[in-house]
Amino acid sequence: MKKLVVFLSIFAMISLQGSNVFAYDHINEDEPNDMPQEAQVIWLDGHRQLGVLGEVSRSDKEDWFKIIPNRAGTSDFELEAFSSDSDFDLYLYDEERSLIESSTEFEGVIEDIDGIEIYDDRIYYLKVRYFGGRSGDYDLKVDID
Image 1: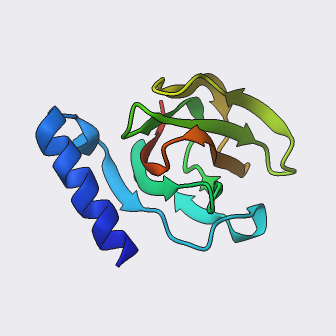
Image 2 (image 1 turned 45 degrees about the vertical axis):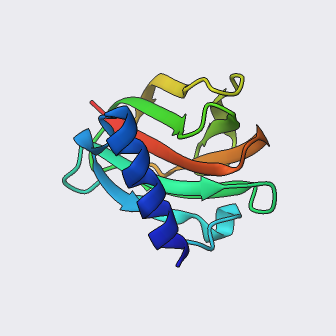
Image 3 (image 1 turned 45 degrees about the horizontal axis):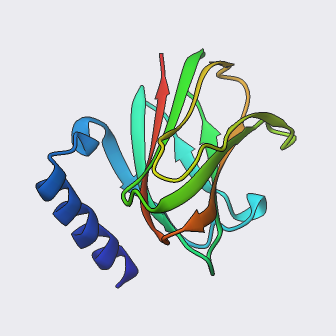
């Protein structure tokens, strides 16, 4: 049911705003992924760009993703909340879960971590964190050039 509500909400927002959210191939967030040990695996096998449609809230504050790249390159990770009243943050960690970079802008601002060198023999983690404002849906874009 949650996935249907997320899908319908996103479809309505796209229709109303004319967003380019579907320029990327997309998958849906898969719960539970609230801790690093439960991180949803994102295989970038055959993909240069991939998007994840998900949701965070006051009661479900974090979503974790385990990124397994299929090639080395320069990364661009972008997090866009579908509500301008939402404040979500984005964190990138290495395989030991040491912080590499974060983006903690104000509500209504797209979070962006870019220019980080990614290696195909390493594993990375992304954390989407609810910080404040309206709970809701997001689009997490992963791009490795």
